[in-house]
Length: 224
Image (spheres, rainbow, N blue to C red):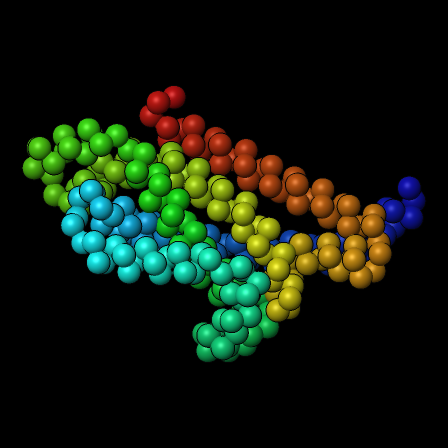
């Protein structure tokens, strides 16, 4: 037991640095995904066949673009975006560089969540708002988002947990992160004890995120 504690103590500064890098990637990725993915998902919902706006060609193009980005495995997307990443942040390596493909991948990912959540809103509520003369903007803000807020909050939780695992791949471009740390110590250095401790930290982190997200969802859900 003593060697295990010593190994963890020796690796602790690197663990803290890796946790900081993971938090940094998520703090940039998740807000941007929500800010840009929400209107994108709303557009997908509004323009889909049978919805509020009749724009079949626009929906076809937008839906195809979202499917195209989502179909890329994250590792391939990250490599393919190296020139774009270098253009945006000045480098293809590092934690900041790793956030560029993460953001690009997360926007359509979250947009699909938003679209599906809005589809679950009772159609009768929307029709009632239309019959009372509500504008499209009022329907979106005061009806759709109000009715779907708990579902959107749950989608944010799922997105955060999912992209915590995506951040593991960031180590391939020098992005670091807790997942990359676990791979380096467990796979390359064969320090299984440190790797197991790191995995426990990741599990605890995920549980805290999920628990916090569930609390927010319950507070926002009108049915509870």
